[in-house]
Image (tube, rainbow, N blue to C red; front, side, top):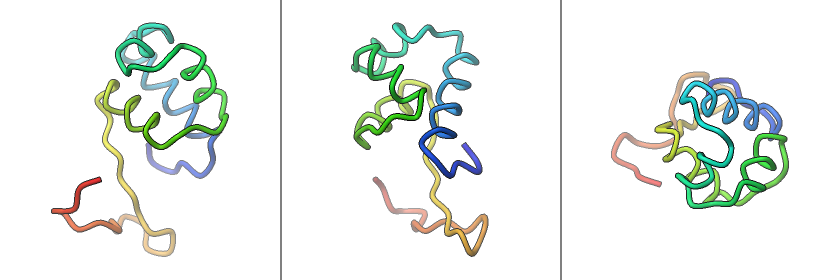
Length: 83
């Protein structure tokens, strides 16, 4: 998910990951423990809870990485930090 700067680009990245996994929106929703309307909302760039993002990322086997804008590639978390 490199270069995500908006809810719209995040939604597109989630959709792309879902499609690469060969999942329907309903299948991803079931795997993540959310409803299909939530997946549709996330993929379309609507606002959502961070817990929803984490559930979808876990279901898609994705990893969240945070970097400082002024220092590309530099993590803002220590390697031992957990979310």
